[in-house]
Length: 355
Image (cartoon, rainbow, N blue to C red; front, side, top):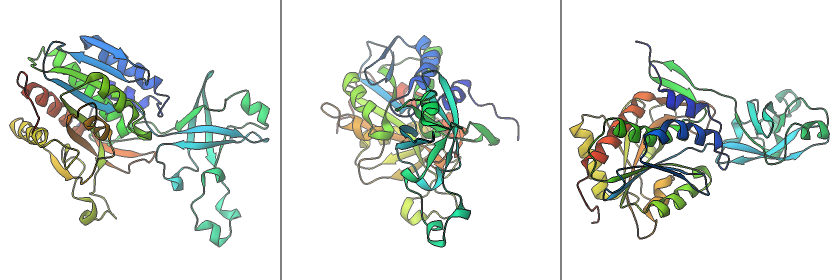
């Protein structure tokens, strides 16, 4: 298999440390790559990035992908200099310990290790238990509380020290594909349409949203500000093609099978039909998932903005969600960019998706 080159914009987003509420590093990457191609560019009080094309077009199409990720936040330092934390977003507590982490401080990054009592020091019953958050700590090599607080501060955030790498062909692993791929897709779609000077009837607003992992908060404010008629959200979705995943419960989706197009009450049926039609026209592989309730994505918030928004949701198949080593096929990411660009170009002047 020939060497696969991951896009620089995406790799820089994956390298950025950006837990919910502390997205500055991802914001900077988005600013660098997207702002030069936008007809208008703005930020807001929640840290969202809003890039627009074809400012006088109609209807308004919003593309949304969140740039925040899971993290840890320091809440206490013991007298011996060990740091205790709370979680930002939905962590699996069974895999936090024994990880290298990077803490973002005012003076720069501080490295540490998450620790807990060794298995040798546990009795049989303790070995069967998942440790609670207060039973895990971060060790930065400090000997006293004063020494630790000279290097970090209460409220500093940390992320796992697991960087992006390709493991085979276009299949890669990273700590935060969820959802740096989404922020990349909405930004890259705008970049390509701008470079190609593509004919658009719609006004296009690509938004890298914040704080999705703690309640789709950036999507709530940005969708109110954009006031879109139609919106596409992109996030990651569960690839169910690995062992110990009952497809009778979770549906059938696979890595490398193409973007996953969602169907259900969170999704406008006209938007769904258009996504399918565009995928077929452009010969883009795709998969379908069904969700019977408001999805756990920014689409949940955007659909309910103002008087309601015609929403679509496309997910990138991902294995091992919310772990330090998520796995994605970057060909699925590329196909989603093509799908979003095709959707934007398919919209006719003043088209309505009301039904």
